[in-house]
Image (cartoon, rainbow, N blue to C red; front, side, top):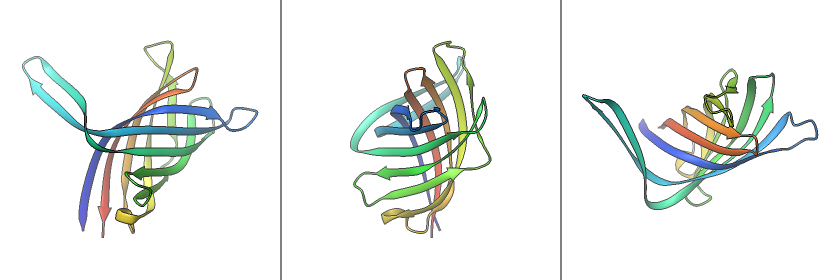
Amino acid sequence: MTEIIYVMQFKGKAVPANESGTVLKANTTAPSCTIATVVGAQGVSGTLQPKGGAEAKFESQVILTGETSFQESGTIIFGDNRHRLHFSTVGQGYVGPSVDPQLRHGSVIWKIEGGEGQFEGASGLITSNFFVSAAGDVTDNHFGVIFLK
């Protein structure tokens, strides 16, 4: 069993996919990157820096199930179109007010439902911690743990 971890910051848009606005279509991308977390006398700090390499593409459908809850399913494509992960929400995601009144802040856990290319037979979980503006601008931070047979 091989374990792969990834951390990426995706940016893009979430737009209504039905007239009532209860279904959204999200499309975001993320560059290859490195992340550093430093703990010291001042506490903790972190940086995310672009790194040479291809990008990842994220596509999903979000179904709002309540004022602060949602279900989501979709695909993440790493590099060329051959390497795909398919996922769906574990339980329900949460989105609510943020300290910044211009943004909503949320989090969700996705279960990997399968994959293609490098991710054939993959399993694991991905956590997402995100912000979304009233205009649909999305910043989505992923931490994924993927297991390959």
